[in-house]
Amino acid sequence: MKRFIICFTVLLNLLSSSCITNKDVVYLQDKGTVVDDALVVKELSKPYRLQINDILSINIKAIDSELKKLVEVFKPVEDATREGGQQALYFNGYTVDLHGNIEFPILGKINVLGFTTDEVTEKVKEELHKKYLKDVSQVFITVKLAGLRYTVTGEVGGAGVLTLFQDRVNIIEALANAGDVKNTGDRTDILVIRQYPQGQKIHHIDLTDITALQSPYYYIQPNDIILVKPLKRKAIGAGETATQTLTTIASLFAVVVSTYFLARNL
Image (cartoon, rainbow, N blue to C red; front, side, top):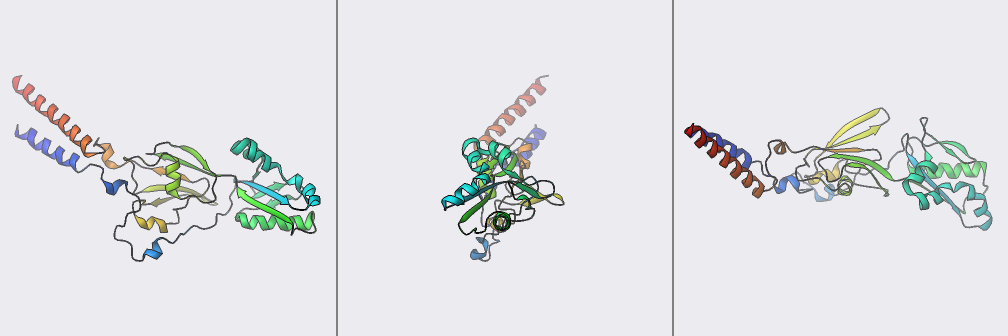
């Protein structure tokens, strides 16, 4: 009987220490790493630079009635955005090809690889001035990514490939859009797989630490893959709450006692 009691005591301590606590699930905690509050809340988001396979929505408008007719040829995406959403943008938007170019009506190929959307706006305006319009002061050009597309998988409420129509999205917003991280997910080591010209790289970010606000991976980029690993304690079957853990302990205790008395009676 002593062996059973010892084994059960060890198991009891293991399960008790495996309860999921607030420290496991609360975002952006001050873990004593904060030195300067002003420094912590400083956003480190950098302008996104376009990559191959990105899709752009380019809209050109003019105030002058004569110019309006001239720029009509540049408006295939505007109607597509209203009618068909993301699918229409896929077919009618301007996709960055393998050489970093987009094929623009009349203007031809324009290289946009590595440029920001603001820089692409200026490039389109320059090309219009060179080849099509003498006066571009009355022409308004808007260049945007056709949605911020990313993938979330692992211990989240709704894994999948998702798109948000925002210029900037932080990783907490991205996870919330995927149903948030489950209580069994490891928020201390979220993996962000990011695409670079030379290939993919894996980055780590601890979302339970407020210093995550300073991470260059706090703001996601198009085509990021966010992977949420399970907590180690999930593997041993511990409950998510104290009640679940006590229920597990009670069930195990009943099994141990029943096994002991059955063994004695054999």
